[in-house]
Length: 365
Ligand SMILES: Cc1cc2nc3c(=O)[nH]c(=O)nc-3n(C[C@H](O)[C@H](O)[C@H](O)COP(=O)(O)O)c2cc1C
Image (cartoon, rainbow, N blue to C red):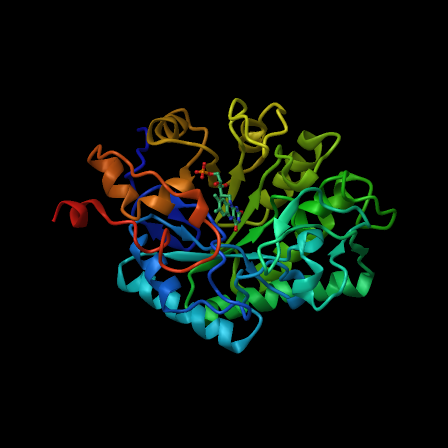
């Protein structure tokens, strides 16, 4: 029987109430110390009717924490903030995984005490992002990581996962997408190394697999997902043969009994700067990966349902629709029109454009 978006699903260690998941979204509201406060807890609790809430990317190491307002999970204070978020989501009957990242070459130097960002090779990310004063800032050329720095980063992911679980989160999603550190190791445009972490697909997958193995050893595979964005070009990331590297990596992940693989692909016709216009790889990853797959990227209720019906995915993650529709699941269920988000309030600021999008019943009350 075909699954619907509203059917429950066993995902790793958890039996989830539906297949409408909330995609990870950086909202940059956790201040210079990266500590989620009560407002952040309210934001996530409002969205707890998602089958799974995946948190915004959360830094595992200070050197990988290079955007103003993005949260971390490497200090006790950050961990305490996240514990309150997990409690708030659980009180509303939800489940939450923390997306964990090291930003790698995309860290702004000013946010990492003037140090150079770290990456597999000294290849800078392209484009600009706002610094702490809101001024668009280009990325620095990163420093190529030493073997010791690689070991330190692997162990930072495992420590972060342990902290997340101890804080009461249900699991972690390892962020291996969107040009950040793990993705930069995977793709050959950013990985020019000649040691055991560069060159062949086996070598370029090594850092990812070391992180996955360290994290699963720490918290168990049923609490761990991985996110790929195999065909996007965000921040200038590229690969000469994405199918080769990502299907290889997916086959290696298959053996590890993870909770899921999460695949973000921009719609080919979206005209989005995220899109490299490459043929989509989700079908090839579905073939290569033996386990649950979440699909994301400009999907609607209709196209998401179609992906489930055609067995292209097991669950669907929605990003922007969840920003302006905290009750997205109920709106889908009852064919209620979606409210439009305001992109000016996506990143930074306070409650406006964050916790003040009403649920439909409140609107009509
Ligand atoms: C404001 C905003 C912040 C985002 N932050 C993250 C993030 O922290 N981690 C991540 O993997 N993707 C991030 N993304 C990408 C989303 O998870 C998602 O892949 C993208 O929005 C496409 O899905 P959608 O069309 O359903 O929104 C972000 C997207 C937006 C709009």
